[in-house]
Length: 65
Figure 1 (cartoon, rainbow, N blue to C red):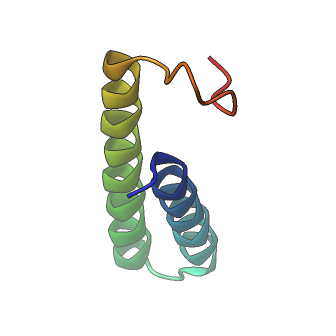
Figure 2 (cartoon, helix red, strand yellow):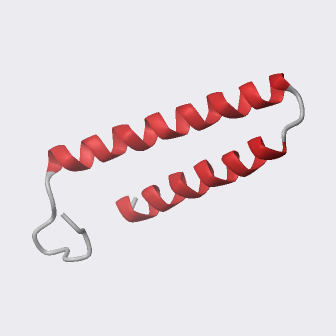
C-alpha cells in the first residue's frame, strides 16, 4: 500500500476520533475516545519511524525530507 495513503488515512481517523471525543458526554466515552486517539497516534509514530529508517525514496520528490 502507498505510504502517503496510509498517513492520510491515519490522520483522518485521528481527526474524526478527536471530533467524536469533543461530542462525548460521559467520562467513560471520553476515556474510550482518548484511548483510541492514543493508539492511532502511536500507530502513526511507528509508521513515521519506519519511514525514517528506510530513508527517503530518491526518485520520489513529493517526500519533504
